[in-house]
Amino acid sequence: MTSRRAAVLGHPVAHSLSPVLHRAAYQALGLDAWRYDALDVTEEQLAGFLRGLDRSWAGLSLTMPLKQTVIPLLDHVEPLAQVVGAVNTVLVQGAGAGRMLTGANTDVHGLVAALGEAGVTGGLRSAAVVGAGATAASTLAALAQLGCPTPRVYLRSQARAGGLLRAAHRMGVEPRLCRLEDASAEVGRADVVVSTLPAHAADPLAAALPAGVDGVLLDVSYDPRPTALSAAWQARGGRVVGGERMLLHQAVEQVRLMTGRTAPLAAMDAALDGVLAPVTR
Image 1 (cartoon, rainbow, N blue to C red):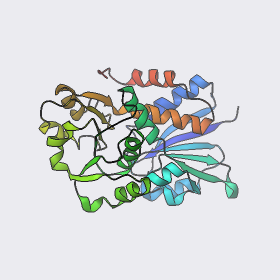
Image 2: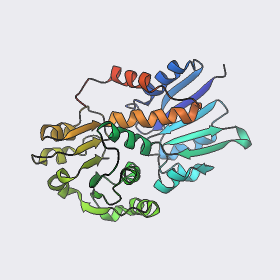
Image 3: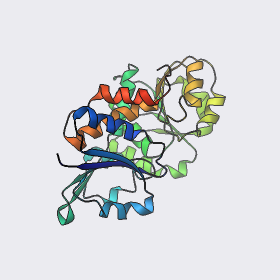
Image 4: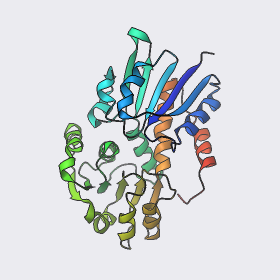
């Protein structure tokens, strides 16, 4: 069997659970010659890393801060990733002068599937997004698929929202920009809230969250687990979807794209449970 490689790239990346998921998939699929690693690669190092890829590489998973940096370095970007303006998956085909790097976005799939586990499958009336980075753009696409093209977006600085607004325009969605300091008083009224902030950045929001929330929260951060925001949301009556569920479902789609095989969801889910302390989902 031909040896193939894949990896998750980011900075930092040591915390990533992607290796657990992809390795479990390879084992279940009988792809014994495949390997998957976590490699610390900065924005400055990314172009050189991509130039060094040989024919043994099948694909890459990208985490922050590389999801937007990678776009101009690719040969082709799939339509969804182009519209969203964020690539979390790179497919490697060929080598040398004939090599082609294709960018895709499986985060949107992961968000929709994770929210689906909480019964959010369409007809969404109201939603809120906390944060304005690359994952926030994917979240706008996911919420639009679920029926809400006009979510509130809570962010620190509207002056830094240009990339998100350009992505929203390409998607045909119309987010309403709001101040992050207003989020604690307002997000509890939304049917779905997605926090795209990094670990601990949402802790002040969690501390100020009032009682009486009843919507669904998806906090894309999964370390620590549960996050302070997830714990506060659940304590105040809301339902929570852990960020690891989004991670699982976007990885399922990555495995399909990289291997050409249907991903073994059950085996990947079991591997994820095996490394995470159980919490109520």
